[in-house]
Structure formats: structure tokens, C-alpha cells
Length: 405
Image (cartoon, rainbow, N blue to C red; front, top):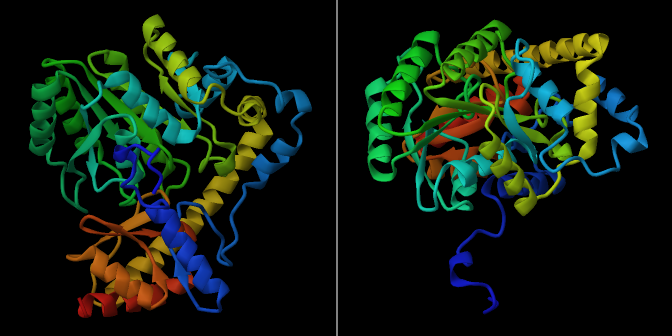
């Protein structure tokens, strides 16, 4: 190991754990093994080919050189920010305060940098997407959790209140990351009563210090019920309009437009215009990545103005949401057929399953050629890459792995 590398940076794995699992699965498949790879968060068809939304790809091919090559403004094209915010909250005229970021991950990272001091803790729902801890840690923060509701159970508002109060007591401010609706990794969403209970907790906590709720809106276009997504976003808008809690959003084009490699998204606070916050975000952009890619921003601006393309994109989203729903239903039935608990799903690319010893179970699954991502109390299964026809094999492998645990 190079002595030039400071000691605090010497303890990391060579590769991201999720990408490492994916690489192993691909290597074994290339060697002729019959593998089932449900690790990565990218939508694939039943043949394993990456899904690209044709409406988006057609529009991308129409971009002119001047819509692709020049630098975008440091904080992002205001027209892009407006279009992206209005895609989620159509009644808003502007984007409030915000900046373009390298996907949703960039937005999450900048929220820590600007809303917490080094050494502070953010609060999120558990289980959570593993890179949350990395994004927080790289910006000098740590992650604490309060429970996401189990299927059919209400939100544990008292647990959220205790967790938030403890953080506020220590650091006098609170940042909450909430990947909802279409939660990663459970595939479920909060009921309206759950959201109202959480909002009540956040209002109470705001009497003790500044509170920010940041919505991680990654998977909203892929759901069995678009109406519940619309209702949830409108509900959060009501909280944002009140002003007691600062409500923002991490928005991304990666999953929504299958522009994973476009690396474009935004950190926005649609219900507030604050010059100091805007300047801080712009400075963070300059000090980390400077400018985000112009092409994806240009595409979003074009898309907002093209009614026919918007209709076509909506139809593609509904088609692939139907595919995901069919996969989730097939998996639910296959698991129950093995005498295991089912896997309720509302939206997104994943479901999560419980296991007493997740690492051991995942290792036994790997031995059978089945790859999933371990969680602290179970595993994440990417139905985005799990064909319905393969769910029976998955359920049998899991039953065997659990039996031998």
C-alpha cells in the first residue's frame, strides 16, 4: 500500500459491493454458468438486455451540437430545473431554489454538505439503499434510521420522534432522507395516514431546531398505481408550502428516462426562494463537479414542450410498470408456493425479503448461481432484472438457502 495514501483512506473495499456482486455474476455467466442476477438497479427486459426508453432515445438523437457540447451553467440551466420540478409538481411556476447535480446521488451528497456540519448525523428509513452510508460518510456525516413500516402495519411515529429528537438534542438540526413513494429496497410506499403521522413528527421536531425533509424521488415512474404517487407528491407539497419544515427533493433522470450514464439530476427546494441557499448550492457545484452534462438538461427542456413525446413516454412507463408488476406478482406467488412470506410491491425496481443471517443466506444463494444484495436484516431483490419466468427458480433457491441456514 502506498504510504502517500493517508491512513483514513486505506480501509475501503476495492469495488462497490453491489457492483462487485454484479461483476461476479456476469463473470460466472460468461464462463457458462446459468446465473440469476438480481443485484443492479437498472431495468432489463426478459432476455437480460438493458431497457432504453425509445421516446427518450429518439429525442436524444435529435439534439443539436450546441445542445450537447457547451458548458451548462454552474448551477444548471434554469429551464431544465423548472422543467424537472414541474414534471413532479405541475402546478409550480418555477423551481424555487436548486441546482443541477450528477444524478440523484449528487443531490443527496450536496444536501449533506450544505445542511449538516461535519460529524453530524442524518436520519432515514431502514432498511435503506446501502450507498446512503457512503454518500453521507464522504461528506463527514453518519446515518441513523427509524423503521419503514412492515407490510400492513402503520408507521411507528414514536420511533421516528425518538430518533429525530435524539439527533436534534445532539446537533441542533435535522436532515431526513426519505426515499418515498416506491421505496428502495422494499418496493412499498407509505399510506396517507403514515405520511400524515410522519409530517406531524417533523412539525413537532421543528420546534426544537431547523428540520429538512429531502425526498429521494428515484423510482416514481414505475408503479402499479400512478395515482398514489401523485397523491403522495401533492401531500408533501402541502408540507413544503407550510414552511415550518424545509422540504426538498433529489430528482434524477437516470431511472425515469433510462439515462443512467447521462449523470444528471437536481437538488431542489421548490417551495422556497433563498439567495443564501442558492449561492451555497452553486458554490458546492463549483467545488465538486463544476458543471453537469448539458445534453440531458437540453433533452429535459425539449421534452417538457413536446406533448406527443410526453404521451409516448407515459405509455412506455405504463408498459414497463406492468412488466414489473407481473414480476412482483409472480415472485409473490412463487415465494408463497415454497411456504415463505410473500413480497408485496407497490412500485420501484426492488423488493426486500427478511433473513436472520443475510450474509450466510446470500452466500448459499450465490452457490446456486443466484445473486442478490444483502441487507442488515435480509436481502434486496432487483425485480427490475428478474424475469417472471425465473421467479420459481429464485423461490426454490431461497427456500433451500433458508432451510440450510
